[in-house]
Image (cartoon, rainbow, N blue to C red; front, side):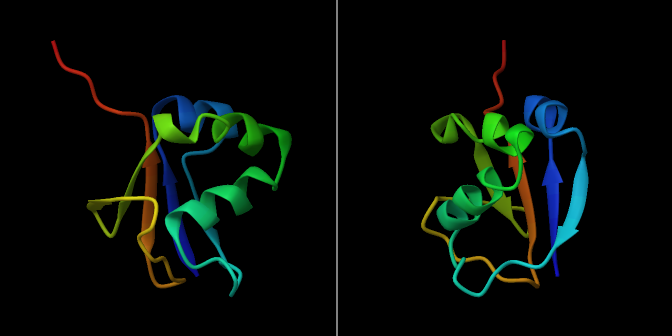
Length: 84
């Protein structure tokens, strides 16, 4: 089962900081996982409606939307970090 971590406004919108999920077999990329999660509830749909504003790390490495995901992964979703 994949460990999903949510940070900042993604966490606040979904209403949890982490969860363990079984990724469906047809969900093989970060992009597909985001599409799948957006169908799980209205909160997930709101959290992932601006997909370009969300960054993803798989096993603590920043990745692009085409990166593959499996049930053995830790996948973190967060907004871009800004500095000042």
